[in-house]
Image 1 (cartoon, rainbow, N blue to C red):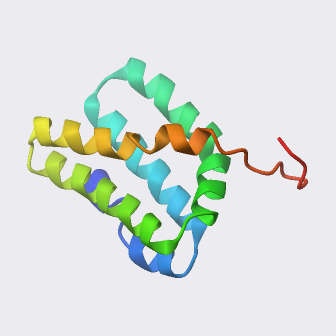
Image 2 (image 1 turned 120 degrees about the vertical axis):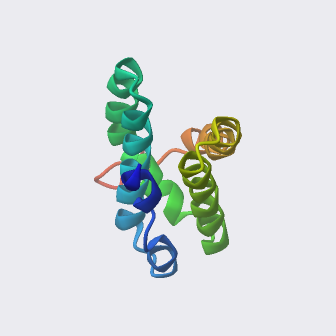
Image 3 (image 1 turned 180 degrees about the vertical axis):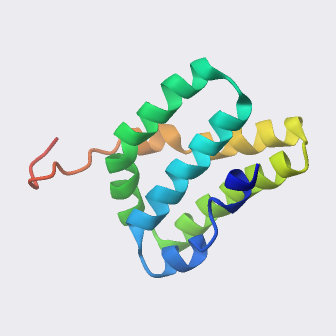
Length: 119
């Protein structure tokens, strides 16, 4: 539970300082903690590797959005953490739907390849 609640500690400062690697690491830690906390091994086997593979997209996505959008993303994640901490499953479910609601827009953007070419 503590890993979920503390995953985004320092996120506002990281967003303000454009520390995208830190933000991606926080996001990965958060989602990993949520999945592990669910005690759903099948979900963990899918989500954890997928999140690691998608990290390049998250990084690119964060660099292309204004700071207030990054702060809104952090706020959405904190709403999930708070609901989980309160053991309010319905609220956590709705909050996570808001977090995941931005996902389709993220994956339609093509990040640059590591060498600067189109992926």
